[in-house]
Amino acid sequence: MNIQEIINLVDGESICLSGDSDFEVKRAFASDLMSDVLTLNTEGLLLITGLANMQTIRTAEMAEIKNILFVRNKKPGKEMIELAREEGMNLFLCKKSMFSTCGILHQAGLNPVY
Amino acid sequence: MEFEYPIEGGDFTRAGMASSQVKKVLKQLNIAPAIIKRIAVAMYEAEVNVVAHAFKGTMLVNIMPDKVFIKFIDEGPGIHDIDLAMQEGFSTATESVRQMGFGAGMGLPNIKKNVDELQISSVVNKGTTVELTTYIS
Image (tube, rainbow over all chains, first blue to last red):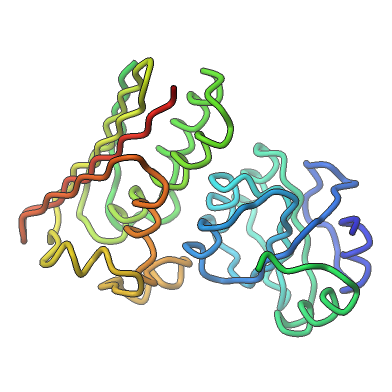
């Protein structure tokens, strides 16, 4: 599923578009626990999280994640956006809860990691 | 090729900066992306551990033709029971560490999964040394 299609489905907005704007998302993983995120095969991955701090972006950098959707209107800070830009990431924001976001995307056919 | 980076305990805004720099060097050396990712995950978890638990530490990196050796030496409370610390789910992390998305007892087991050799030695109330070895050829 195309990243733009996903963002439209959850009424999201783009915060930073430094990666592939036509990224094809194969699977999604939703977590606020970065240690869990660091255990994943991250190919074609969209990370859905409510954790908006520097470690979210550092984790994505280390785990080769290029697309992050922040839920519950958790806006990434300036430093986070700068680092995401340096690392060629796309950051998105939506107002929906984690549960609601995952429900909508799963129903639309987006697969989980496991 | 040897590098040394200081790590400040408790400074979560900078946690991961040393790992980020090492990862960039590994990329420049054209090491296979899958191996770089394993090293990156392991060293980042180890760096976060120093920030989360120690007062301060040092990250020493030695990139050799056949392997990458990374040693973390910290001054801190040490680990009382290393076998227990290696168990998934066991953690002594504080609430502030958990708010950063860590401290769920996944760090050391995740490091072990991502390196070829892991050595941990610790002296309570003095500090901990963690050595990671990954073969690249």
